[in-house]
Image 1 (cartoon, rainbow, N blue to C red):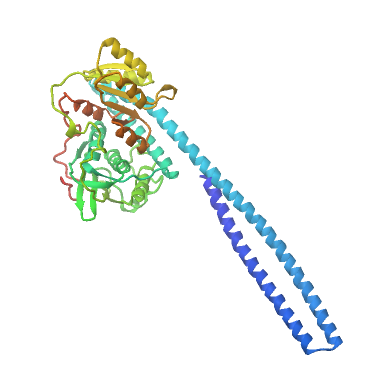
Image 2 (cartoon, rainbow, N blue to C red; image 1 turned 180 degrees about the vertical axis):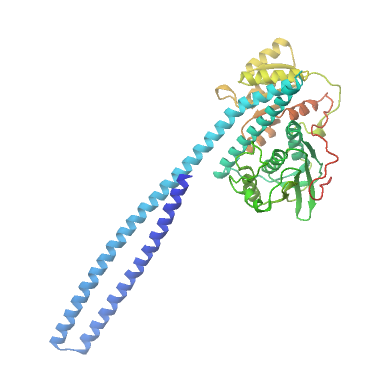
Length: 494
């Protein structure tokens, strides 16, 4: 921030110096014009007065005038030289300030990326351990504390994601990749994750199905909708949250309704400013730092989308974003490999699941969760160790799960391929990563892998496992809210 203020002050000084330099150049041109006029007058006097005395007087006057104008010209040239030197110094200072600001932004982004990975790794372990305790025998008071811990971890994860998104936007590190996709695919990705968060907060959450297709960047639109849903849950101490779509003439409007604390009219425009937080007695302690909606606004401008908000203090809010319609296609590359439409129905059975991660706590947490779900887990820190365990137990893996960043610079997709090539039938693969780069996600999906973000969304993972061939499709993970009547006209199935 200090580097930006320095650069702005330097730019102001440079503009002032450029205006002064322009004035001096105009004065120089005026002096040259005066000299030419004097020379012309002297020549006329020479022609009109042929006497020697007249020639002497004219020469004397010309000498004085030339001497005076020469002194003025030399002074002006010296001043111009100083101004040019000052301008070069200002330009150099501006260049150095810009380099300093760019270097600071890059360092900040590298730090946040590293912090995102390093912090989300133990955060992922904590989520796994808490979820493994959720179905166990607990006293009512301890169960309430467990739910509060889960909500706190979800808030921490949202804060990390917000900081990283803000840093990438500051560096113009986000390039939209528009594509046609069904909006239902996006809602299916968000629903299971926020369903458990809403239940932990004691809220009802409902996603209304929609069959419309839109055209925009799926991952950036998902970030916008996630912010809307996260805010709705955070600012709704009791009641319901509804996510639905409306068909408009100019595009599909994705709406998020809540029955929360609401926003007073005078704050509605400022809530999209960076670090602005509505002063309210009902503001939750985990309300963040005021960056979520500013990121929504910047992403909407990047995608040329229109966002809107309606709210009544004490009654609730309605946030929406309008997206242009897309063309339905048969291409399913934008969907996860475990999309409900591709799942088969069969007899429920235990799966042989290989988990590869160099973090011991993650391995223990995944083993606890998958074991609780009735699966056999082979935990390994590297691909070679996983292959040795499979061969020793004479097992064929049904699923391979790997962290993307492994020890010694190894990558999860490489480890998965190393395990897959040891078997005739290629088992499906799942990559878990804290890297927010959508290009990485698309690259891995094109290679036949599904990607989940850290901390791991266990509702989505369980739904994926239940949709594997030979398993019964899982029930919906979002709490129904058939009686919910949101502020304004309710969204309907479109």
